[in-house]
Length: 210
Image (cartoon, rainbow, N blue to C red):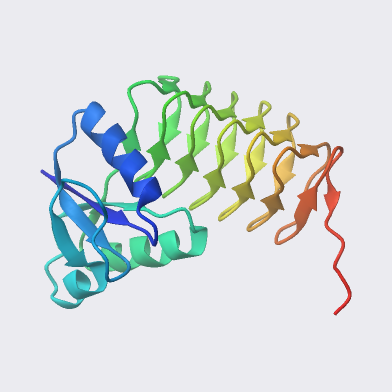
């Protein structure tokens, strides 16, 4: 069955996903968008996702939400599932995925990403270029792991976590739901849900007055 890729605001991430999908052997029917503009791709534009959903024609189709915003990716994924649609994962052929790892529906695993032994991805997770989740790692639904980020073994990341470029999370640590790890940070202790940490070692970001 053909795949429909849903492009976010800029369409840039969707272009990367489209290339990965084609290289992995998936057939792409076309693009739907979250805005009014068609993405600059040769693949046919099918219109706004909102219109497709309102028309009730999503049922039975496979979708991939190519949008880096975690909350928005969750909202549209769950809306489509409620209409009987299916979420298709896209795994670039240049990713390294352990045969004992598990990938949830609607995930993106891009070139150079490594998913280690017994690691588990929830629904709608993004593993971006050259990031790694080591053995026994767990990444919750709709998390986004940016290029070059590294998880040591048995790291547990909650739902909608965002990990910036080249950040490092030491083995065995836990990141609570919606935690944000700044680019280049080195996380040496658990991070509570909803907290943003930055720096080396990573510490909670101070709130500016006003």
